[in-house]
Amino acid sequence: MDFKIYYKKSTVIIIFIIVILAILIAIPNILNFNCRAARTFPMLKLQEIYEKQLKYYKNHNKYATYFNELDNYKYRGSISYEIYMGNDIDKHKVAYCCDPDEIKRLESRILYHIPEYLKLYVNKNGFNAIAIGNIDNDDAWDIWMITEKGILIDVQNDCKLEKNPW
Image (cartoon, rainbow, N blue to C red; front, side):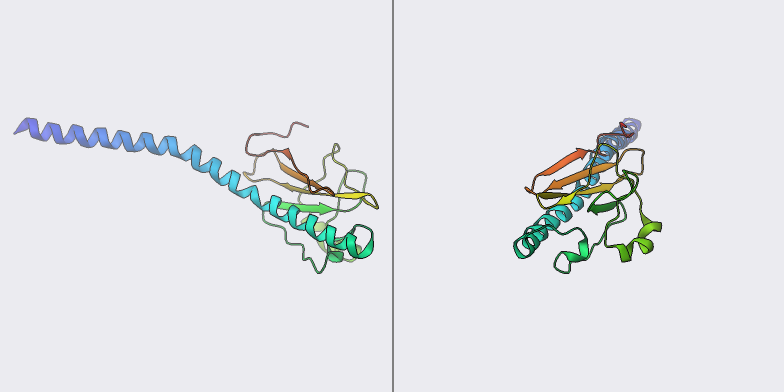
């Protein structure tokens, strides 16, 4: 009789240890999956901007400088990302996401400054747009860029960094 009770207790303890180990192994994988999933937002938004820019270029023979020029494109950021397009306004300090009438309203919610090594531009030959975000609220940023050729560049991956390298 005592052996059966001991056997049941040890089985429960072993199952409990296995469950705890499985949870400890699964948590980092779940967090990494969430990080990778959050990185799809800027990719989709930048691709949408690229398609709108191509349409604008066909109609006006130049690229749009502001979001409101892009076929009623409504800029919608997210909690963790800001998207910037246009000429660098304040020499690498802040690039604004929309037309001059919107700047004052949005100055208080600009979350990220464009790093010095990235240049925003819109001219007759091309454009780029940049998405900057912080997925996990650490010191590293997630940065994506798209060019007039539709090339999507993963500039900096927040999922792999804990601190900005610059």
